[in-house]
Image (cartoon, rainbow, N blue to C red; front, side):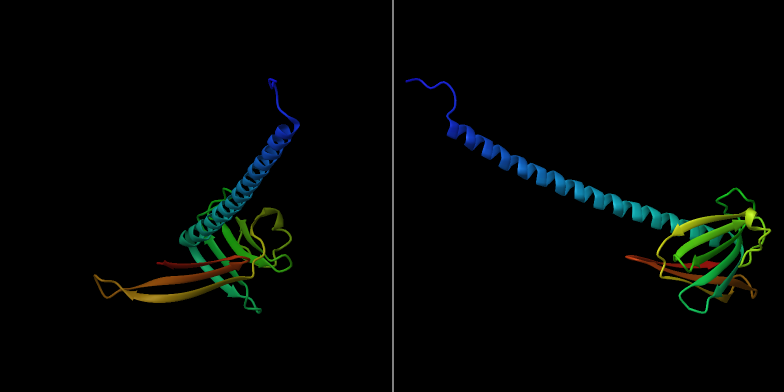
Length: 180
């Protein structure tokens, strides 16, 4: 008696083995997809963090003047400055950083006119607003003015040190800038 083909049992065993192999392949692909999503979220968060750091650093380093104002709740500060760094092609813009209290969003305001909070209703149309970071728990800016002796003479240079602390869920940032 010659056999040509597979028995029903052989067919069932091969199907069962195929299902087991497909199950493990599906699990491996699912784990890979999850890991890719995690890596993408992590790299996106790092990119946003780096962009925020560069923006704050550039604004402060290119500032002509800086004024800080702590708010009564001590979790937030206001940061006023005039800088040469503009996101909206304004020469020598006035910039204000503050945290919107209702949704805890760090906001950067930029205008060609000097800004005070609250903003004058006539100037609102000339103010650009950029939402930088949501869920801010702390935005504190400290300023210290230091006098340093110059090496070549007796004249003293005045340097300013700015310490910015920014905290949001799952991350925080500390920026220390010394500027002449």
